[in-house]
Image (cartoon, rainbow, N blue to C red; front, side, top):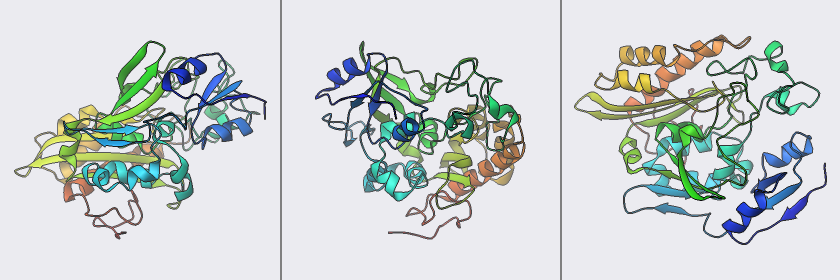
Length: 351
């Protein structure tokens, strides 16, 4: 591993100033960054440890009905916060479907948003990867690519974003609070992650020194609590990234869908919000025909990036099932196998 300097700032302003220097990287739990450093994929000159910064480890239920989640809140703490899980059940279910219990106990909310792709060609420095080294090429294009993107990919990069947590957050219009050299600003989470285009080395809209300090869910997100689910197809239920996933949330009034939210995971370089499908569901009856129409629309622009045409049909089916489960109502408790499509609608319950 390359030698590096280590800095532990006392304030957010000090952290931003330190990280703005070339070659710097923020360190929180390090569950992704340290792996990248050990493999020689990330080689920072300086680590800026933000774990002791004050005020970033709180879950705040605000007077206007929104919730503000500090960037240093642990994934497991957020998922098991009773008030949070009741108000945002799909988010809690997504968190509990990600990684292992040990990693969830360490990993932070801010780090989850910024984790890098798990593409095998990105992680293997013997292979060409435009995301790791701009202009070098993409060996995934002609390699083992059955798990790669079917939406928003380019000839430069076909990797996917690995986060479960981000998918329901994007569906619920989450806002990211960012501290930078120019002060505090806010950005819709949907705009944080970038599609590859011709510059896949740029994962996000963050600039030099920018620090995510919180994620906020607006008051309207609470209105979907009664009909919200996250479903995830993975190669092993115990511990794996999504092949495809879907977050579905509905407001049902008088037997009709008054409002719908839908986002996909595992299909693109960012969580994929499907607004056209949301619009076609609005005013429709919550039944198989309307869910199938929404699923067809959600994947209408999908195309294989290699040996992964099966993901398109799989994504359609997981959309239908996620909508079906959300229409049936949110379980009173999170299933023992969170986000698994193989659990019953009511779920095997865990206390």
